[in-house]
View (cartoon, rainbow, N blue to C red):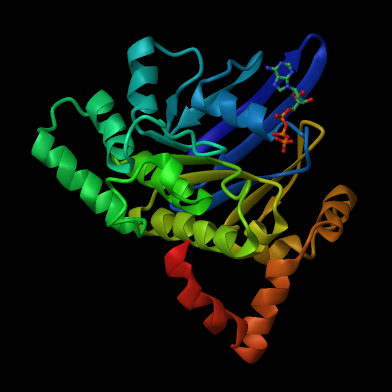
Length: 269
Ligand SMILES: Nc1ncnc2c1ncn2[C@@H]1O[C@H](COP(=O)(O)OP(=O)(O)OP(=O)(O)O)[C@@H](O)[C@H]1O
């Protein structure tokens, strides 16, 4: 579990995070939801240590991260996997080399053979067993996200952070990437934090949702509770969002047709 205590952050007098208190639960897809500029990315960066909060603290499974000793922070960082917006693959490396990279950096005790086995396992897990020799420029946006996920989980991460995993993807590919993140979270019991403003992701994978508005947490709950939430800002956010996937879900449950039609296409994403 990751615990965020009273995190505050300002830039030149502009208070972006106004005392955030929240928890990200183990074995769940925790969504940081909110409109543009509400502070989701800043909070994510504070949690993973890319940015320092002005006030407040972050705790990973009981160990305080903020202002702790360098070696303790490094130990926590080793357990963090990141899927960056835009995937952030190394263009000069093959897909397999990209996935091997964090193993070389973080798991120096591994032999080359063990590394290659792990790369093969991770690529297979994300459905890219035949793509290892390809260059990033040769694969689609959805495949890049899959490589990014394989790279994030390669060192056996305990915490997985995904910054807008659906950005730049079409709706069907977005569904498949969401499903993959959800499956991996539950399969390995990791603590996943997904930054999103996509209500479709909420309906699909929102085990635990934290709604941010103007740097404050206004609501948290799960995907079954969110549609009945009484917070006006959240209601406005929901109803101004596209509910394509909610409609799909209703269609699946009532007719069973649309899901069947899309599943076969997934393999090419
Ligand atoms: N390094 C920085 N320096 C100054 N201001 C910043 C910095 N990073 C973020 N901000 C400001 O903080 C506010 C929140 O930004 P943030 O990126 O966290 O929003 P967000 O909720 O992730 O939005 P989006 O969904 O559009 O990415 C914005 O007003 C942004 O301009």
